[in-house]
Image 1: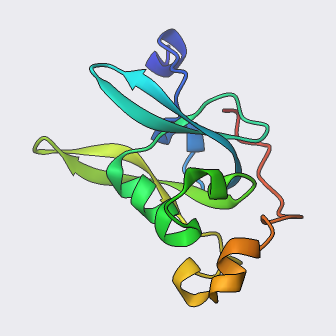
Image 2 (image 1 turned 180 degrees about the horizontal axis):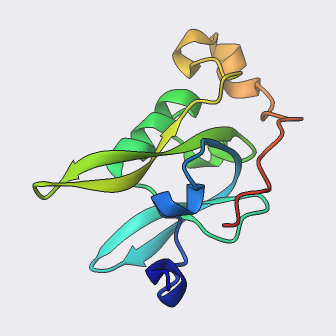
Length: 130
């Protein structure tokens, strides 16, 4: 029996990505109580699980689409599994990066930064069951 089946989580884990990079469209970002912390959680179009945003992942998205989470809605990011050091151990983690077709926000003109339309027509991987 897989422990991920015995103890399902409402948040995305590295195992949910099945070793693949997955493009997802941000539907909303909400602040939620995660243990003793209050953290942002990104939810994605067509996906039931959210991604708890640690400082690293939130900073990556902010570098791509700006500091205001409202500007992230309708935008696409790529999730990928990796290993990270955490409390002295190597553990599985989910990280975020810009999709191949995204230009960094800093490279856009001020007009493009405020008026660029959300990514549209991007195919997201519906085969990943989260």
